[in-house]
Amino acid sequence: MTNRNHDDFEDLLPYFDVDRRWRTHPRTGWPRLSWNLERLARHWGAKLGYRLHRSRKSEDGKEFILVHKASSAVVLGAGYTAPIESVLEFLERERKLEAQKKHRSKH
Image (tube, rainbow, N blue to C red; front, side, top):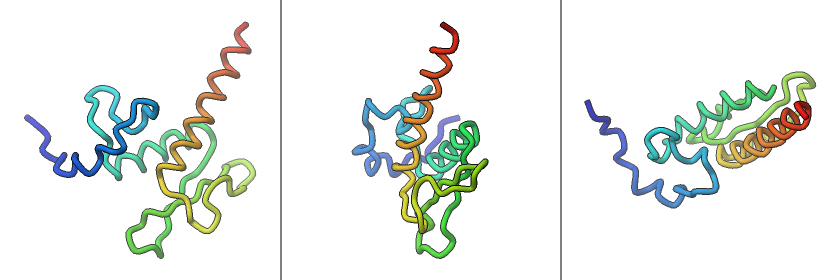
C-alpha cells in the first residue's frame, strides 16, 4: 500500500537540506510534513527535559514556546513567537551537546 499524503512535496523542497537531518524522514528520505515536525519536536524535547506548547490564539497554530521542565523557564519563543523550525534547530544543538557530554564521560 502506498502513501499518497505527499501532495505538498513540492512546497517542502526548499526544506530538503542535507545539513538538517530532521527535515527528512530517516528511512524514506521524504521531507517531513508540518504535523510530523511538531511531533518530532515534542519527542526530542521530552527526551531532553523540555515541553513544547502551541499557541491557541494564532490563526494557523504555528507558533510555539519551549519551556524547560525542571525550572519552568521559557527557553525559546517567549510570547509564542518561535516557528517549529527554530525549535527543532535548538533541540538539534542540544542533542549534539548531550551526545558530546556522554562521549566525554565514557573516556
